[in-house]
Image (cartoon, rainbow, N blue to C red):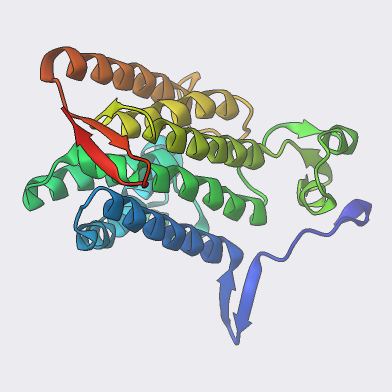
Amino acid sequence: MGNGVQPLDPVAIQIGSISVKWYGVIIASAVVIALLLALSEANKRKMDKEIIVDLLIWAIPISIISARIYYVIFEWDFYKNNLGEIVKIWHGGIAIYGALIGAVLTAVIFSRIKKISFWQLADVVAPSLIIAQAIGRWGNFMNQEAHGAETTRAFLEGLHLPDFIINQMYIDGAYYQPTFLYESLWNVLGFIVLLIIRRTKIRSGELFLSYVIWYSFGRFFIEGMRTDSLMWGDFRVSQVLSLLLIVLSIGLIIYRRLKMNPPYYMEDKFGKVVKKK
């Protein structure tokens, strides 16, 4: 690579012809951390922890498939002439919003089958989702993707970023905005906000809806900086969906409070989540 800057090796382990890439390692680590956190949350809410494991067994493959379907739909101009590429997910092309849609639909059906509250289940996994997304963006970093527009090294140094991030943002002869980092940091902050909200008196489902609002708000602005957005005509798909999700989530909070009167939940001084009427 020019300018004397070398990117990080995307391959974590090479065994013969088999390559284990950092992207996969980072995503797998995010899933494990999310699972452990969700199990801890389930314990605080006195929920059977096996329910979380069972949900994950279904949600992971369905989310991957739905993330791919979402991407293919909005890149159909390419895939309609290259049908064989649709199943080649290893060539890249998945979308986090597609994964989230698949995960939520899976949780809705799963909760009905298990005869448990979807909203209670969603509240349990909300902190896990956002921290997993924060970690997962570093897989994009290793692949030098999900970046923003071209910028200068001086600008990146002005952000006081470590050299390994600045150097990794040098792609094909130019430096780019580290939008992966912006979203990762936004999600870490969102994780902290959710932990704070959890200690307040909130109604069932509102922790999950707060996650949706927080993530969508940040994603709307960060998406506007990216150069690889999926498009719907002249609109960036993720920005349109972000706005819809914010409006829908706020509307659901208001509607459920006025019409459904869901129970309150609050974390007590011992860290247990207790139900309040």
